[in-house]
Image (cartoon, rainbow over all chains, first blue to last red; front, side, top):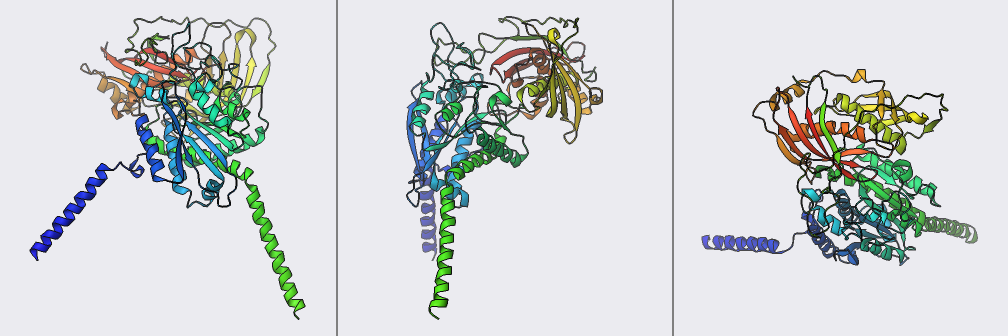
Length: 372
Length: 267
């Protein structure tokens, strides 16, 4: 009796030990990933690999360019098959185009998790992922982001890390002034030492080229382009140039205002919507302007928390509420864009319902009167 | 002497673009990190402010008045100038003033004398979060090629005056002791963290910065305190608490980070 008891104990102990050993050897799953902490680039890359591994058939990754320093620029694609084999549209999201805005990459990771956790259970999300693919780039300006992690003196870097042009001495281009959208006209500096230096030519920066190439080949597919920044608590619609207005300005404003309201409602933090020349400052060469000019109807810049207390140095205990707000705003715009393009399915539903009704009525009439 | 008077003596407030500013690292070593610590006031060009008063309007003016959208940037920037002004008057390590909303705004072009902004704003007091004061404020930005600070007036100024709190007195007593040697750097740190003990010093840096931010304000700027790079307690003179700060100020419009050196002492 004692012997079998001891044997049992030994077996279960070694069983437990084996399980423990397996867990240590195995990479940690994303279930343990802390979305309420800031992560450096190698942690984010590892997380991306895990997300792909854990969601086979739904998440793939794609490298679509290189940074100046030669790093791969990679996005996660979330794609669920459309049950009727219908053509799908897509949503683009990028974070971290400005290196010091750490809450932005944190939000892209949060967003991916949210979609993956809700697409099977939330009715609206379920419908939307059948019609929309999601392209999410957690960190676009990887060189800049890596630079901000070196030490405290580099934390407030904003630009890319390309070398200075001739006759100038400073590194980096403001990627959000470098896109080919009224490039170099307003709100930019031609001094390479400036934090709003727009570069030597439109899309001179490899990071801007990568986005341009990927998106311009998909302008019929992508209906929503969201680029995430901090700080300021604003939803910015095209254009940054004061003298031009998007052809669909009214609906951009409607969706944007709705998003700002949804964001404000989460934790009573004020968010506002408008064009940059109205509520911020005029500037050209932004990615959201380029996307709108390329034909993508719903194009926005999100400025996340806060207003001015911590600024770029948003505490980690605010990551969760900031991401909840941003998610509410992103979801509002994605839903708006989705419903605009996929009302056919609603109409088809209504048509088939009314056909059913008529057939039933006719049949019962025939049965009642013909068979009498 | 304690915090009562809150007449901030901002000595040596110097603003400069150092060659070693965080936004412009040296390009000679591509992988190199940014600069060494900034020493006050050593190797940087000093800008000293003149207290030139704006000239009085002599001729009868054609005063054009324009209504502004209170949520748009023009009114908002002027409201921030009011925020800086209020904190130069009443800000303490334990009390900061800001605004929640601009209700109405318009401008009056005063010609040579500058551009006047008239605002109705709700002033928020960090000491009393539930109630806000509706105030009328005026901001006059002078015209000219060199930077001059705006002149600010606000109707509810008197009603914002408060006595020194026990908290402030304790703070002063504790840190003006002869052996006190407060120091710190990078507040908040990269992760946004501020040591609880350093919070009043951080808030004090914000208040002291409003002197500089007001001085540097014009219609094309919007300043916030980005970070306290360094804080050092200086030797107490006559029982005063004296602190030397290196602060990083962020201008939202140009996206520049300026380094400023501030020495504070109560008076």
